[in-house]
Image 1 (cartoon, rainbow, N blue to C red):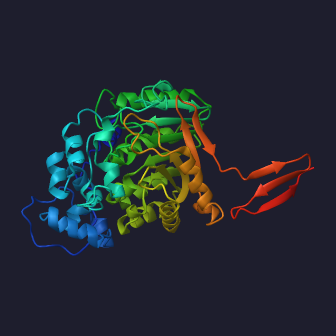
Image 2: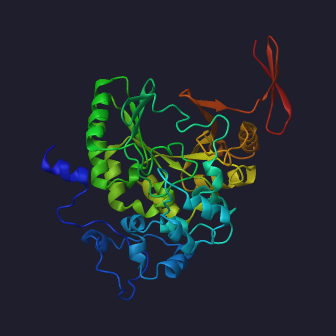
Image 3: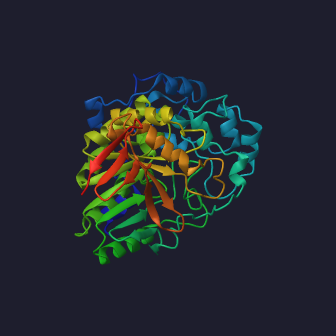
Length: 423
């Protein structure tokens, strides 16, 4: 690797400059040291801004009074100031006894990690608020129920080389990092994210790239982790460039929740870089309509404007999004952001997830409540990722009433029956 490639991988800049975007006019000098990541000349000339909702602004002024709007909109500042322990949570949220006990006993991977931006969306007083339930541990997380395991999808079994899962004939899952800016408590890779025995390195990346290069049947590479968008822009470009240089790789995908939990990461520099590697697709992880903020509208708009097709992957969660009205509101909101609802996942039976999982019938009920009652663009595929490595299996409500030798009798969304000739 030459010096330029090494700098790109490590995220070093010769100039030390990085992109940051201000959301409002400069504020009076604070007690903070000089900015580590000043605005670039081009950005000052362009006057680029990143929106900041009133809710975020009020949260910042209350809990991070030394932080200017420009600092708040610096994604590196957001990462550096993540809420990561009991004291940090208790400062911004009135924890229930259940939450407090669960946080206090936590060790190992899947730590607490919440960006200040996303923490601003959590209810301070209501432990049953959907977003709060998905990111603050409760004691149920430490119970192992029937059928649960640490690796329910059998990814370790299907790892061709460390960090590369080759399950389907023509595509691979490339686990680029074990780091997330914000940790969902129902994460299917809770065994490996945020610490533990799994490691990710440049040497591992090289082995995975060599494997893909040698296997010409691989035409589709999905980058996941952890979250690939937490990697520096230069380091991520290093990886994308090498994958795109493999002739039989036809397109790349990135699976990420960053545009939802750390929307400030979607800088102009990032989108300029990503658009150089088309065809590139992105799967975003949305959970609830309360995530559809002005900041997220900006992050998704920047990605869509860069020509990146956006799909949404949503996990069905008990008491959080397991109703037709909530799911309809989420799917409609996504379409307005130019995000196509793609998958609705039955929650994987990861260890400690019983308090999140619904009956499979609930997912079918939701799909039936969407199909025909809204545009087909708003109806995702309901799938179960089969335990043990069977892959994604789609489930649909049964609309077939009966069939004969020459006729199918079908039921529509309103419960009316129709006959279709099929001799």
